[in-house]
Image (tube, rainbow, N blue to C red):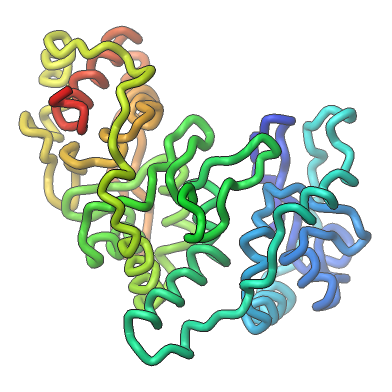
Length: 343
């Protein structure tokens, strides 16, 4: 929690700050009121506005109890660190903080910060309410999976918006739509807990989310999150558009796939259960944008490291195949097992 993680933004790189209870470098001098204002409103103790790379528009929905519990955790269980904060790499003309107060007025809404998960009687409503709270609030899933507008705000912050969780680009990866997940609740829970399931595996930024976060969640909360996400079930939300895609070239791609990919993923693309993800109905393969699939082939990837589960690694092929060859593999995979195969 000593900070330093880089977030690339259109206006420059931002570095996470020290939030350990150190009284000089961290937040050791923050009262609960100071902490609550920073987490929910994006305002630091000295009054300056935080950059919304910190997802306080989502945290604004959190309950008072959860904010209190977070404060107690940071002040009593995190060891203090004197590591100094790193200056953000934003040109001074764009680094002014005062416009963020206007941004907050436009986009931060804390009117839905009350968790009603335990009030309804029906199990459906209990799971749905708890899942909505976790996904829209502390989980801030929309920060990656919801497209952003011209002022970098998420275009929707809850299920009332048709574009909420409809997919977006982040760090060169395509964060897929979560509104059309085609797997069982148990399989989705397994992915969030271990990063892999019988037919699928997570990679890219989501691998870090599992390693550092979701593997530690309770079974009840994973159940609620899975129930909430699968409740969308919009069958047309994930339809693949071929607009802007590379021209399909199956012959060269098939040969290259057989040489480099079929040993693990199989000639039928179905992979190996719980080890190698299937390419059939894989969200990276069926995505509108092939960026994530290209990233996996170019740079390789590995499944999350979680308790009781070893990580499996796929090698990088950027130095093995030419760019044209890698594109042909992508075209073959998407043309064979993506939804545009019959187009």
